[in-house]
Structures are given as C-alpha cells and as structure tokens.
Length: 423
Image 1 (cartoon, rainbow, N blue to C red):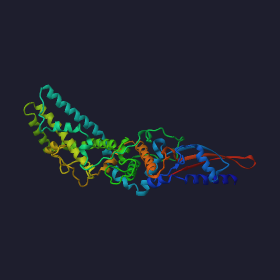
Image 2: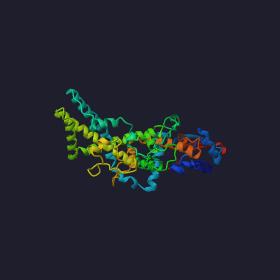
Image 3: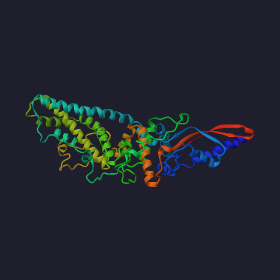
Image 4: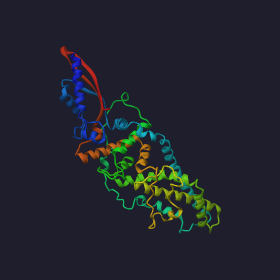
C-alpha cells in the first residue's frame, strides 16, 4: 500500500507538472510542450525536480532516464504532434488527393536540373557553331539575346506584380534556432514514437500551410512576413527568401513548359521560321536548327515568367500546360521586361495557386529542416507577439521518463519508473 501511495504521488505530480504546458504555443500552434526553462531561457534538471516536489512528490529522489525536447532527433515530437493534429482535425482526406501527385513532384524536381543543363548545352552548341563559322546573330528582334538579358536581370523585378511592395523585414541570423547551438535531450523513445511516411509528410505540409504566412497572404503579423518562404529557404530576410523560392519555382515551372512546347508543331514551326530569319545571312543549316532549339528554350523561359506573375498576383497556373493554358506568344516574348510589356499573367481555371506550389516545395524539402525553421519562426513570434522573451524551443520538453527512489517504513527502499509524453 505504501508503494502504491508513493507511485500515486509521483503520477499526480508528473501530471500536474506537465499541465503547466506553454499556453501560447498550444493556442497559436496546437503544440503541447513544457517550457523547462520556465521563462528564464535556461534549463536545469532541478527545474523539473522542484516542480515535482511542489506538486506532492517531495521526499522522493528523482533521476531522469530519458528526455526529449521539441528540437531533438530532427524535431521528431514536433513533427508527430503537427501531423496528428491535422489528422485529428480534418482526417487523412485533407491530403489523400495529393498522394498521387507526390511522384510527379519528385519527377519534376529531377527533370528541372536536367532541363537546366540542356538549356546550357544547347546555348553552348549554338555559340560553338557561330564561332566555327565566324558568324553572329543580329541583336534586333532576337529572342535568344533578349531572354539572355532577362536571365541576368533581378528576378523579383521581372515577376512581381507592378504594385507589389516587398517586405524588408529581417532577423538576426546568429539568434535563429537553426544556426545556434541547441540544448539536447538523451535516451531513445522509439518504443513510443510513431514512424514517418509520405502521409505524415503531407500532413506536416498541410499544418505549415495552415499556421504560417506567405507572400500572397493579406494578413502578416509575424517577425517575418513571408514565413513559409523562410521555412523553405532559411535566409534572414523576407526579400532573400522570396527571391530564392521564386527561383525554385522558375525551375519547376520550366519543366512542363518546355515539355509542352516540344510537342506543339505550330510553336515549333514559329521558332524554326524565326531561326531561319535570324540565320538567313549565315546559310548554315546546323546553325538554324540549333537556333530554333534555343528559341524554344527561351520561349519556355518566357512562359515560366508569365506563370510566376500569375502565381504571385494570386492567380492559378495548371501543373501541366496545354495550348489553351499557354500564355505567351513569340512576339510577346520580345516585349517581356520592356516598357511595352503589359502581361500580368492569366488566372487559369482548374490550376493551382501559389500556396499549392509551396505545398510541393515543402514536400520536396527535408522534413527536419522545415521543422527546425518552423520552430525558429514560432520562437520569434512568441517573443515579439506575446512578450515571451525567454522562450526557446530547444528547452521545451515533449517526453520524459523519471526513475524515482523512496524510503518506506523500516528502511525499505522502493524504486520505480514514471513516463509522461504529450500526444
């Protein structure tokens, strides 16, 4: 009976200690965790032992057998709680529609690098042919030269809506969770931690989309305005993060654009006719054929610019292109980025919005990387919005197991474990 009483004392104390979870973290981000720094920004095991004594476990000697903080093991417990919250709130139907798309996303990422290399190879092939024949293409009405200049211009200036104002918010890099040395727990919790998979990755992506802001959102109140872009890129300023995300989307959108233009006989004929005009003075068929391919690549790049304009203006762009959804004419390509450029990008019915393309990038990015950056943003927001200046995600306990030892009557020593973990 004495053993049962002391176990009950410890269980009650443990439940009470973990009932002191970080309130703002739960209310704003649906995550349970105990701030073991108790708003001081410093962790010590004695903090937990003192609270156990306060709640009725006095007279018991404690030792921590294993402990896990939100940032441990690739932010494992944070990822678990986020995925479980989304599944409990919405069910897995919220992401099942995307399960069939994950293979396509992965293929597009792989093809993006290959297509970028092909662009460079075709351009080099054309240059080599021109040098070998001591010729050059005219500068006027030349989409190849025009697009070459666009590629060297600031990307945001090329794709942002005319009235868009880019946030200039920044964070101090050395204070970001991702960059600083973190407090670490110890011990293995594989016996109580669920496994990961494609479904949990999609659920975590859905959690991020629900709780963090992006460029196209109207309401932005965080330490950074473009939180999802920071989670993807991890740079200290909104501008840098937006620019890096736009460049990634440029590569991903280029893949279906170039894939389609290679199947459209009318567009290929237009490119060949323009190549013939540009190369009329050279009279070398190989140069004309090479120029036609580079024109198609340039045209696909211009269409990708139009896609990004659509997305950043809040419109939708389909994952794959067709003749109906193609936006840019070859004549329009020559006006792109000039004063005559009036193209803002279309809104294509049935397409995907900017946030859905971010869902794709989040899935392709490392989960642990996204998780630690997410917790870094949460840290900054709790500090600025709620005055929690001592809050640190790497001091937040999600699981712990104590080993307790107590002396009963007649000098009998009794020891027992107590586990607690947020679910």
